[in-house]
Image (cartoon, rainbow, N blue to C red; front, side):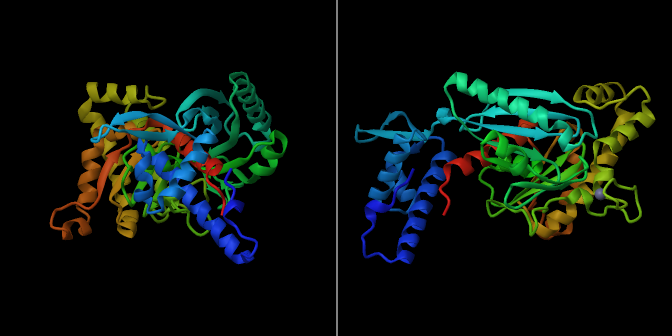
Length: 405
Ligand SMILES: [Zn+2]
């Protein structure tokens, strides 16, 4: 851990001391952030890339290496024949447990400090269960991972939950999830006290947006939206490279913006919510009307229908795509993102309708104003279902490694 007393003098005023500590914590966090983002960072370039002095950056890197947080990744020949040391985050520093809570199953993942999934376990539960009803299952599985880590000689630092709905800004409480029918679940109190590990809860789509920023199509972008389609419809918002959570933590709940006044009743109590026209139930029921043999959608089912009856299925998929694109215009006009990434369990539908979605979005008048130079790119996520767990893992690693100011 970082000690600041070496630089202090007895004459330093309390305020100056705390300012200096803040400054050092900021430098340390910046160095870790840079090393995490650039997987092969030249140790010698850190001070210039971050504009902090050479001795400070050297001392921070030495401390991080001594703590086992960063490792040397080998050397490359530089022009002078001397070898430049490359450093990166040590993936084996330890594990964090990432848990995704879906409407009928729990997905547990053991993740390393590069936010790769080391182990995964899927545990189904009856749809409509209360939190109290599955709390013991959560604990048993977490304890299973604690024992596994112990056997591997690894430390587990924290546990995170990715859940639909609104998480409190301090990441301790699920304020409410309409999809699960849960409200005011204090994860910190319910789980942390018994397992003695820091516990955090975050909205699942926000986690996926973070994964896009670190590993997916959001990499390097300043402002983008990740829109997930599946059981529900939601958005994660990255503005100026930061996750935007709104005033109360619920920003991005675009599934419950009104798509059609007095339209299809939604489980949230409103009518005509966007989600009712873009979720899995909507598409499933449209397809089942035309093809009664279809009970459940999957990439294989859609591929088969497109292969056998393209003329029949494409208008249904296009209708879905038009709903999706029309509902995206509002958020696009509001934020003017560089890209809208479509993810979630139903994202495979984009393989057939990406053109339709793009055409509608590109015909938006703001794009037309730009003389045909499209502002907004629409793309299908490349990360698949692991996005939620890997993004959650990134957030957990940040919480473990960054010094609080
Ligand atoms: Zn709704």
